[in-house]
Length: 153
Image (cartoon, rainbow, N blue to C red):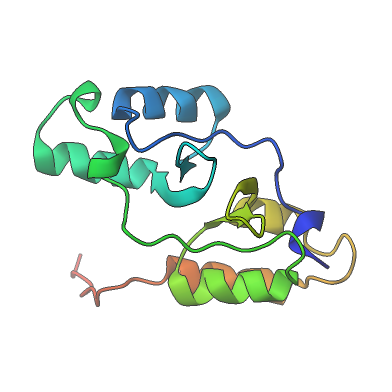
């Protein structure tokens, strides 16, 4: 199974200069929690998530309309290609602890988006993805990056 068999092809995106109020509105209107960030040529240069927005607004104590994507988005973006084997994409999700991968062409342009929820919903359809593959990826993505201590009740 290839990434193209599961990826979403109608993807909303934003630019580095888009303010967070506009990004949030796009996310709300399209029922998504992340957007690829593209430059003027359509090349993927980042991803911004609803979590990135929440933490940025809290830490900056500013209005969403006063903060732009370039001030918030993480400096690294992980991508895959439509022709990639789905297991290679799952490996990237697991090791980088990301729920979504922009799918890019050879020139880096946005072609689609591979989301963990779409992977879960499509598991077993073509017998190329097992439930174990999905659960392993979900466990890796959801793993805490910092050790947390349990509190006694």
